[in-house]
Length: 233
Image: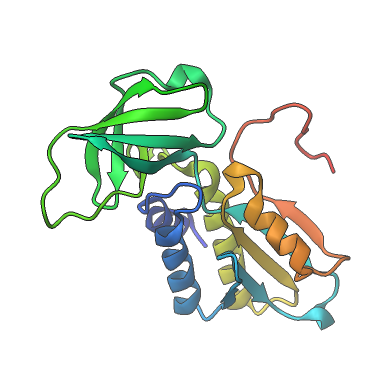
């Protein structure tokens, strides 16, 4: 798979806004890409997507893991007028939460901005830039107002590289294996709600879907943080 083909997969995924528990757009694209390339996949009861190539007879399985969500806001309730109360889910430093920062309500990509912090938790007032139309859906989550996807000087830029580049890498690997008819046993674990305690990944682990002797490789695009070390077990 060349760089342009990989970028096309990444673009499809990153064009879908997502937040913890609101990964349905990304998941639909993951499943569509699997169907287009004849990859075997299933959705578990939690909403993770499990993609399988090859069989046990090919040897020790390899599990490639990545997550569909990205830090974002869950809208809790209206506060009246054009204001909403939202809970931020994910690990982002407090310095990023400055009043006036542009955000985007979903569905509908409705422009809004961050208001004041409410209480000690990461709950914030969100102020919509315009009145919602009668035909517009009630917003459920919100993301930073950043470009979805772009390629500049050979590098991919976008709001949700963590971890949709990892998801794209899993799909690209499985597509290549299928095209080359490689003898291998590879499982793609594409999970939900990683940003709020690895909830999707823990669900997969508890289900015992992954063989106990599998080599599990986590594909991440976030920087190294203590105590985790790149290349460590």
